[in-house]
Image 1: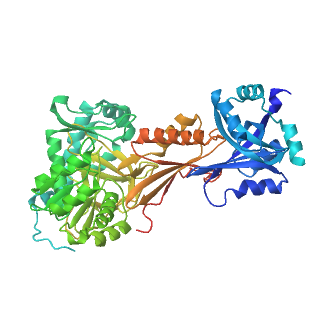
Image 2: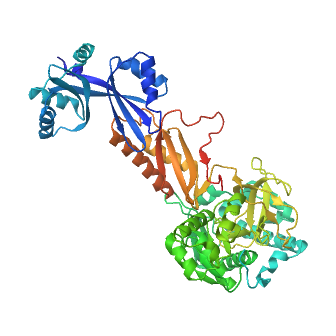
Image 3: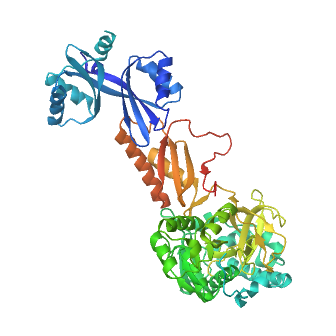
Length: 151
Length: 442
């Protein structure tokens, strides 16, 4: 599989940290019939960043921008880990030992065959792809990802 | 109000009461002399006069001042540092400058005679506010390049009062001194005084029980509403004073005990009101831009300086009997400039800072508020996808960069808030860059 397909498009949306701001992007996507595969919300005292993985990211971006949101697109990786104690620790150890910079991570809600799937945002996704594959981790590309969600 | 043991007429105030015809004669004599001096010694002024074919000999009446060219703040910046001086440096005994930390500050200069004039107008200011020898005056205006501290100091000392040159800051010490030294009058910005009242209360000090009976407030505009708050809260009479460094510093005008308009020391400053658009003189009583000409300053004569302050001359004589006329207290300006914590700020300075960091100018708005007596400035910047990042750290860094750039330009701490797009109102005409919420509910 080509490296490019391994990279998953994540949308991030800027939110002021005020009541009701989170519902704007969520309702916008709901109205457009776009399903959120997973999300993560990072917050500071003043603002929040909503990170979303959706199926049709281009349409989602358009719809959010039309609603007045500021949206960026970032490439992230989805990797399988064993869904048992130590699963996460093992992959983190690999990353740490190689000195690869991890910006943030979160998880998908689904699992399959005792495997959980985590989302990783690396500073250098290409280096991370090579590293993880060489260490035997299974990266899930976007096509495979959407299939798993359907199940 | 606290009682004052003795309040007599101070002979130094005599020029405030000169009969109007004699005052006008004096003004004309001085105007002719200063125009002559400026023409001979100040290149910028001479060039402008020559361009319009006017010479010092064309000033035959006070109305002829309208023949003279205007000056403005950019002239002082453009001639930085000493291009407007009319005296050689060895006759100049004092230099002051504006508080800008980057870009060229405004430099002003004084000869020995100029310092004496400055001292006398400040003495007359304090006398007009009912102060006298025996008063203990706490001078919390900043000492240094800023004209406020030393200007007030020299005047208060000449008055014969006991002067405490405490300068600004260190609020707890200000309150301790006010209480322990038996202070009877304080000089500071009105917003700082509001802060002092609050802090004092927190420290268990009720200003109404202290001997302090007068506040001499200037360096920023303040409202009647604010006066009505300050006076009962502190048990003081709150006086407005007016000045600009370019003209002399504090001491251009002052309220008197009637607290009803600012008496301009007309024997030293010729005051005009002009139409801000056309520059045409306006009749007394009508609102326009106030323009000053210094009649006595030797080191740096200033001819028809456009202040951008909007006010009007009060045509009736004041009940105090002074013949020097009053202008209404300054409520607004003809440009965007605002004053926060005694510092002049133009929105364009914020713009330059934002532009320098971002490369493009985002939509922004400046919101001024007052928290526990202290002015706060918030700069709201709309997030665009260029500024935005998926990483919290990157966004925080951008915010810090913007904050730092603005603080470096202004010398003031500001709060930068990132806001969602389209939250800042767009306008068709001139953008309203500044929302000033400071004088609400006071």
